[in-house]
Length: 116
Image (cartoon, rainbow, N blue to C red; front, side, top):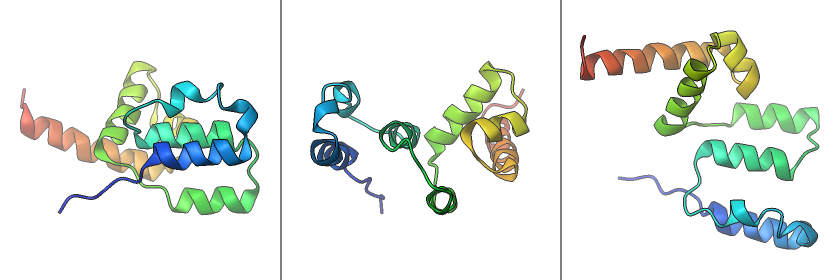
């Protein structure tokens, strides 16, 4: 059974229309996207809700989830920018343990698919 993704375009369009009608043109390029990745959602949340209190931040950190394509984008970012796990975790506000786990998991998958 396939998981269905929320309709982020509708959610964010409603949010912008209700809360920030004057900035609708500014966010138009983002709202016109056909597909939203998890990283897109996180980025737009940062832009839209610039102010976060500590409790909201902690709650959001505990309830984040990443799909495989988002994880691969994060790990590609690490390779391109030559970051270690600590630097990558700080940049994306992740746990270092999560980054380490992802590296181990996806390196195993890559070696199983195409051994050298």
